[in-house]
Length: 322
Image 1 (spheres, one colour):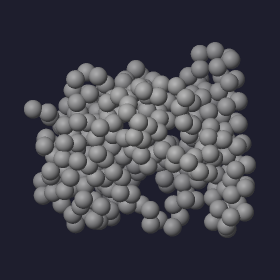
Image 2: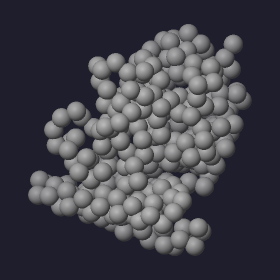
Image 3: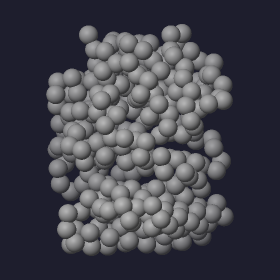
Image 4: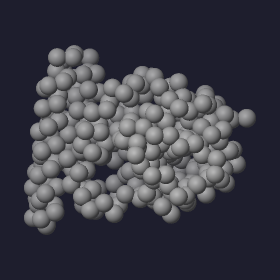
């Protein structure tokens, strides 16, 4: 029998969307050994309950809460969840299969919201800035791949038939199945800088790419139903906070996990050119976007602020730690 824990990070305010997820947990064909709900210290417990979950409190932060929940889990395997998801009754059965069968150490569902749309300006802008680029290669066996710009290429396969399991180097951190020891091995305590912005963007890419760099296999399970209900969309300042966190944390991610991982001078030169082009293109496109509204002007400014502070962090904390 599969021995796994569910670990949920939340601030307790997702309401009906959280209840939807709890209902999905109750309907799983393979029930968890335990459900651990991690809240920030001082926060109120959610009214929605399974009735048998264990509530624990940690320092506030998407990374801190995930670390604490992972350490508290008492099972060999962990299903990490955010608090606003929906999935089919056989979800655990399907998502755990590649890990249990030795195909991978980590498994994720397809997260369509992570991918740009198939057409239009919202597809073109990430391509121009080398932030998210449709893959030209590995269309039958790869989901995402990290680029030396700090962005990623992706397989937007849609209705096109692909393998049941696609290799991947990054994913959305809202949901994944993993061996507990493998999770603890990546030392996420070293990445608490992600939370300095108030919105830990890039925490998913950091943890998955660290897993990849350590030699762990990550696969995307393509035949499982999964949906992100997104309980945070009502935050009025979300876009500005996200713009700042995006550029700052991307810069730090790029330096720590791409630039420093290059094994020769030419690799570092290419990585730097790609990164600098990516950020320059993003700034230029942001300036064009400023013409649309005052909110867009603020977002563009916060993006530039984040890039400045990301480079400052690199200079102060990472350059002498080669």
